[in-house]
Image 1 (cartoon, protein in one colour):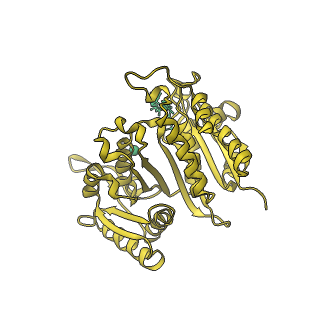
Image 2: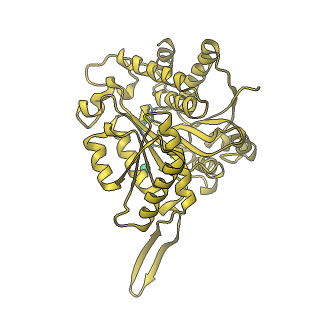
Image 3: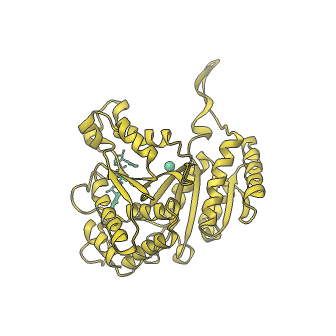
Length: 363
Ligand code: NAI
Ligand code: MG
């Protein structure tokens, strides 16, 4: 049998810098853990535009469709700001997400003890936190019709429509239940079934999918506003939270900041299972191309490294190896290794991007 395939798209700015550290780590897993991947690398974003005049070629798109997982750095930068909308770097990423139909966006909020001081919440509320927000990404109010600004008599009216089909709800619910089985086996579904019909349908369908296919997973339901309160009051009560596009946008950004730095935050976007049972998958750090620090060896590679850990767990069924990698990051932080974004008063000289990668490998 051939090795699982991994398509790497470093992109722009700090993308290639943080991805170089992930390449070292992939090499370590190959040499030391016998984990082999068929790795190929390609261009996306401004890097692709510079060579091909488009932020994503059809050939790269086809490779992404066939890959067992795609790992992306970041796209964009001031150099491309004046480009036509149709060839902007971001369009490359949007095309990947759309054509791969990545409907489940996974945003973990995980607190490393050594960084608990970075949280805006009290240390004991966030220490040891490890939750996952699953946001529906391809439907809901950002896509529903009718939409627009119309004229009614003498005034303008802004319209957006929250619309979810049963199958759209069921498939993201399945993603959440599958994830829960690989984690704490608990799902909390959030909507506003008290004031929205789409919320009533959401609640019913999530419950039906649960009862028919995932009765072993513990399921609860919460109104999204109450969920927002609980998220900042006692976030450790949650394991997996599944919610729609709009509520997920807000809740995942809020949850991310429970744990501090942008340089630490990974993400995944998953789609339907492929013939081999693996979901279509794109893994990427939450941060962008950080043009203000690009090319200086200052970027924190942890968000990208932790995105690869998510790939190990959710695409390649290597949960133990994923935990090994996450534990290494935790140990390095506990040892006081800090890139510039993690520095606090009293810290000595910052570690460079490659110092951080090397330290993770040593750990
Ligand atoms: P950004 O995430 O690139 O940077 C925000 C701030 O956080 C900057 O001060 C940056 O230096 C810092 N930062 C980000 N990642 C870091 C890391 N790994 N280590 C240390 N510090 C880090 O967001 P910004 O500045 O709004 O956007 C810059 C460019 O990136 C734009 O062209 C934007 O369109 C693009 N972008 C791309 C994304 C993607 O590829 N998914 C997501 C967000 C923005
Ligand atoms: Mg947002």
